[in-house]
Amino acid sequence: MGQDVLFDTLRQGLWAGVMISTPILVAALVAGVAVGLFQALTSVQEMTLTFVPKLGVMIVVFWASMGFMTQTLVDFFKGTLVPLIAGS
Image (cartoon, rainbow, N blue to C red; front, side, top):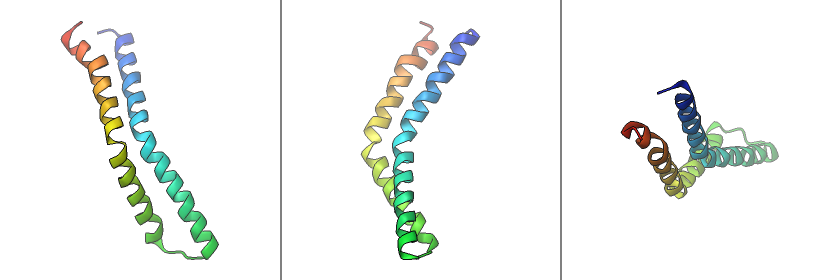
């Protein structure tokens, strides 16, 4: 295996990781901004108020996007890694 194949495989793997993590990270960002605005508007400074809603939103988004994440990983493995392992 040459360096070009190795680096291309790593690039595709990193891109698959970015695609898989994007929905959860965007949801955490939106929930964090919403909770931050709520805290700023109401002057409530509770530490668990920032953690619990973000965790709940992230769990819901993870559950909702599980099919997309699984399909992305399966496509990466079938399209990139399995042909490299099989030698074709």
